[in-house]
Image (cartoon, rainbow, N blue to C red; front, side, top):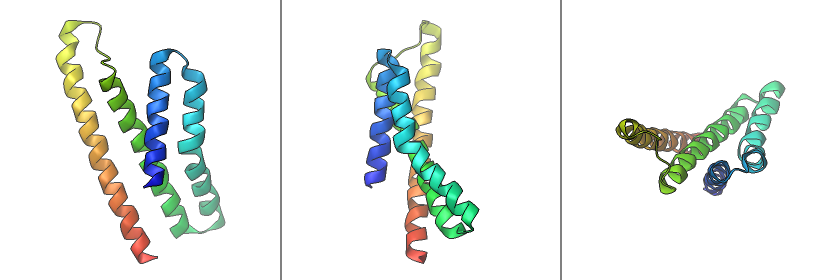
Length: 121
């Protein structure tokens, strides 16, 4: 659970930084905090032949990736980011809710996969 909160906060910070015009600083921190540690751990464990442990690190990376995307979409929605032209508004609204639904479903599936993996260890 703390990993999900960290990834959501990182994604929100990255999305806010993009809308505020300081994208390079906070987006780099977002990647360094939420995405790189589990991905590097996955690579090290996979290279060392620890396949089960590598699977856990890969699941954490995927969960963090989904959380970053989900929180980014929610932040953009909360900030009222809209298309520039009115005829794109309906398509953008549908796409936003589709993205939120898709990321939420994927997050639930991966959290369940982590719980199942923990029970087998």
